[in-house]
Image 1 (tube, rainbow, N blue to C red):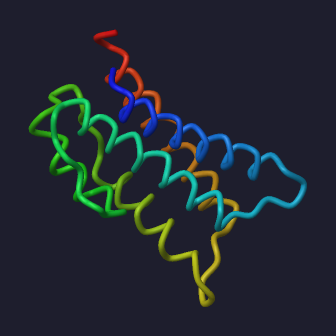
Image 2 (cartoon, rainbow, N blue to C red):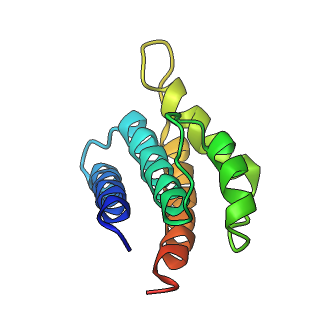
Length: 127
């Protein structure tokens, strides 16, 4: 694994750790949990793309990244609903006018945890 891929994984780990700390806190920030959950998966998807020789675009849209990932990573098959949820939750709750609820944050963490495990398995499969 090259240094660029390692850096993407490290950044993703930081987002995952932040989301876990926020959800465990006495006053959890549900908006930030959704944001960091999406960021974790975005960065890991980009790490896999780079690992497989694809330069990822500058986007936060996980569905779009998925369209690039599927052709180069046959072991990556996930429901697009999960990717749509994370993409929507990360953006919809970042600004005034909408706020995430506990259920949104819990779902974001559930999806993030599952997809993170799959993506890390792909990255470390050939190590």
